[in-house]
Amino acid sequence: MKTALHELPVITDDGEFTARYNDDGLVELNFPPTRPRRSPKKTPPPAVPAKIRAWHRLTGAALALVLAGRPAKQLPPLVWAGKTEFQQAVWRELLKIRGGDTLSYGEIAKRIGRPKAVRAVGGACGANPIPVLVPCHRVLAANHKIGGFSGGLAWKKTLLTREGIAL
DNA sequence: GTCACCTTAGAAG
DNA sequence: CTTCTAAGGTGAC
Image (cartoon, rainbow, N blue to C red; front, side, top):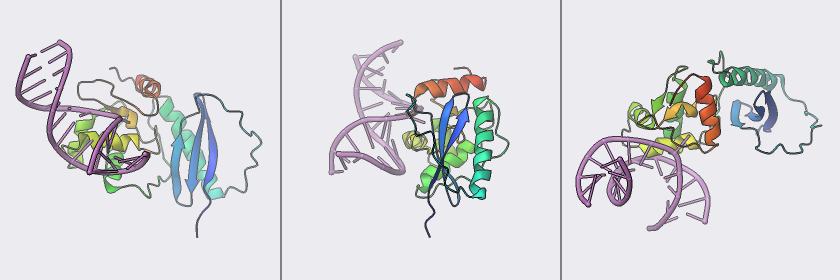
């Protein structure tokens, strides 16, 4: 039986992120909209299961920590259903990165056994449904260039700076 | 099938 | 130094 997708706002000092959950955990996290939409503020949270509220609390705490440049204590279950093995391999590798560390796209490619799939790694990062918690921003280009970021380079720079990573 | 993409090492000018 | 090329995975068209 299909679970309704629950969409909940995550309030942070950097704006209102949007988290989506299904029955298995967190499936997606979005950056705050560039232009604050006149949101239907009075979204009557229709019976959000306690399970999901608990995950949401973890998400909020983890997000706040990471945005402050600190490692998250605990993450909610991350759901990557529908994604390819390759992408999941990349994201699993990203989750291993310790605070303050960075990797290059090439480095990740080697670690997942596809040393030449450098650009594919970039593609996988861009397809990452859960930015920040899955630290795609800690991936720099080979010569310490910042590289790109589909969610907006400004975020990447900000996050890196807060973690004390210089370019 | 073709193209563009969060890349990169290497070769040529 | 700069510019150009080729190569890998994936999704959009």
